[in-house]
Image (cartoon, rainbow, N blue to C red):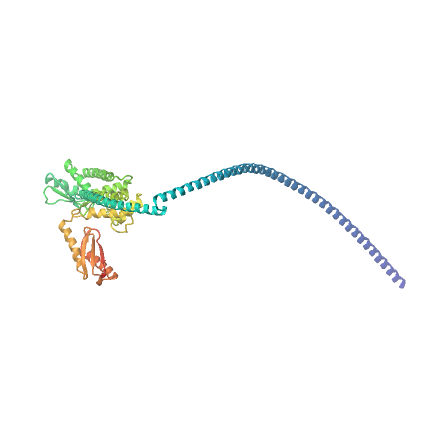
Length: 507
């Protein structure tokens, strides 16, 4: 048993030794393989490092070549610049040399001039001393005496010139004022009686009334429908009255009716043809009147629409005054005043002609004639100074230019004088008296004056009864009372004057 176990143990031990030997051999083989792999890796790494070094050297060589090329290019550029700078330096040196030569020449001339100046000063001094010896007075005394003599002579001449010029200016001013007034009176003193809403057409006989009315009134209805005018056929012998607020429609109806009466053929078709022809005739008349007005005023470059609206004013009246003739008067008067005052004559005449242009459309559009006039002038390219004069001619805004003030004055001269409008002289005087009566009804009033054809009233009050606030309240109260109790065209300006004087006597 023991030997068997020993044999087994020996066998096992041999097997273990064999296994250990085998394992060692495998381990050695693995170590050898690992070392071989390591050597292979090192060889590959060395090869890669060599290749990288080669590539890096090639790249470095290429970069170095590029840098060398760039350096050579810069050197060439520097050489060119150096050559240019060298040439400029040569030119500058040449110019500096020329300037140096000129400075030397100028210094030499300056020295000569100084010598001559010293020489002349010496001569002047000697002559002055000699003249003082001969005259028996110093140069300063002689200068004072001469200035005093010149001053006296100039004072006398100044007084003489002032007297002569005062007399001349006074004479010329009187003549000029007479000329302006006479011209203005000739332009303004014209009889203007124009019906504002009706026109009368004469008939050859009363039988024509029936033909105008037509069967069952078809002719008169056609005429009224086409023209927008009311035909009044009453017991007035041999006359038909045309009534309409639009003067252009009334004129078209009048011309058409006169043509129908003259032709004798009165029926709806003929009426339609005649009204259309009359409308064309009136349109041509409107353009012609507008062009004539602009030509008469010497105004060029007006827009055609403005010319057309000017022509419409030929059929427009305001308080019996023809608006186109009134506009021409205002333009002429404003132009004359501008010429006398040295203002812009062209602007004054143009603004005067266009100041009431809004009245051409105020019967068909909303707004005052000033607002509509400003809108029309702006729309058709008028200058700002002309638009401002239109806007300011009734004090809707403050007049900021002399031309605007002159247009406002010319408008007052043309429209505010007695006889220019429908009011009779008696009504005109009564309105002025009524204005003064309203003002004088207040307590503390010294005097009152209705001026500018009733467009302004000036009130002089007792200064001890009114301060600044009370004066303002009085002006508002008077204006309110005038609005409530009077009917008048345009506006009335109320000016309250409060004067305070203190007098002492020196004994």
